Image (cartoon, rainbow, N blue to C red; front, side, top):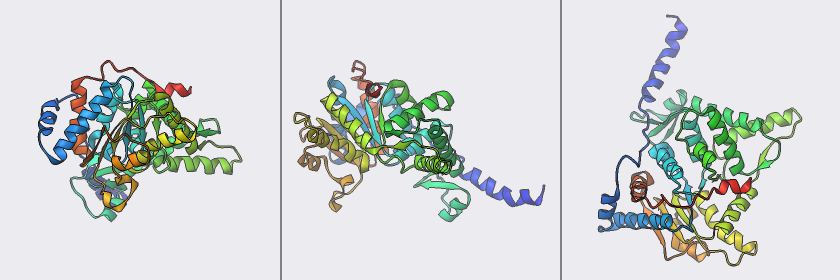
Length: 354
């Protein structure tokens, strides 16, 4: 064994030890949450809130005129809800997605390329993790070298595209197409969205590994004196508002807050500004969050507060103040096993832009 091998082996072994236990994503089809959700409806506090939120989601599924948007912020995808969201899409339980770039790129697309998230069963000093090229999300690990593979893949996709403006929906569709041809995971939300014509919007798309790859694409193109593709955030807002106008009745299933929450709610106001005075507020709304309302931030603003802006109906809404990873499996399993999705119309809003 050479001296160089002796120098590198301890780090390799330590990294392998830390990245040894994969996060296993929950399968909502494997258990029936209906009995426990029904029991929780008879309780108080967050349990009863979750019971009512589940009822509202089932109302969305039962309303054949309702287009349902899944709205995701935070790290639930990395934490074990990735297959849950994929199951909702596969079974026509959602019609569109608005999410953070991290949820779509750093988590779902990342696993679509064959990489994994790991449980942080041992958490050394974060400077040690940095030296091992391990990124930490609370008690979850990501291999930074694998995340750089995502950066480079985004760059490669951008390099193949005609140099023009793209909405995030258009670019994510190209990512889904890439996974169909080169992916390593069938249960990827990005891949399934491409196959089922379900549009995904990321209004802050470059706040993720996509940003690094797209910056490299732009810089390399400028150096070569060539035109380059760009993301058009205004097109995101316009396209999403077009869906809202055409859809009429809409429901929101929101995990967390942030930009995705405000973006989808603002489509009502945008439609009015475009002259559609008859546009309906979002009829149904559920938000699961741990954000505190007292600081006045939009991420924590209640759905009742959103009603004052003319965005959400106050009659059929529910806030659930809970960590989403602990309650979404119950809500989603309950809805899956009640089966109201089985005769919902298939909308394919993604195909409306072709």
